[in-house]
Image (tube, rainbow, N blue to C red; front, side, top):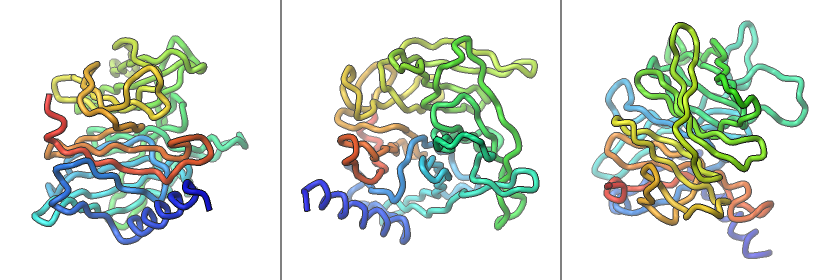
Length: 290
């Protein structure tokens, strides 16, 4: 058995035990970076203070399922606790579907990529690289199902541009990281709805394979480099400033205490076809001071 195979099996066993029994980071580890193996491959991640004030409501896009992992994250004297639930299917008319309506393409286009909370409690989710966002409305009762209520197609002058990361602020403005189909040119954009239209504006060029993203209330954006990036040092970035080096991933979300959770897709990390299970990476607030 190769070292990679042994490491993969060990990580896989740990990831599935975490997923089944819940996850906790002990209090004595909350001052350091902690990696949590997952039993699925994550991409986008988003968070908001939970409506009941108990903690933070976190969404993670599970790429292959496609589904949304939902976790209530709370903190006490014992540590950080993740109480995990799932949005695996939604009502769509008279059908029940896996987040997205059925499509005719056989190439596996039903892959969850971006996910973020809307200010009204709805969940926005997109497929791999697409510009279409599917809006999910919460159930009417605790044991009810989410409903796929609408689809929003973000406009672009460059029709082939792919959306790799997204975030919606409290005013309903959407921030994205996009690339050409090549994908050799990456940029940040935002979209604002006015008079029933979505208007697009440029926020600037960013390095190839930049992901993220999370936004501070003052408009400052945090991003993270993907493990494949070869023109950007690995790490978490505050605008263009490297703040936490040696961390890579595909999504970032902040908790109420100022700490962050990074989602890392592991299928081809650290190399194609010999990857490891996906992971959440906890980054303490003290490391994110700027």
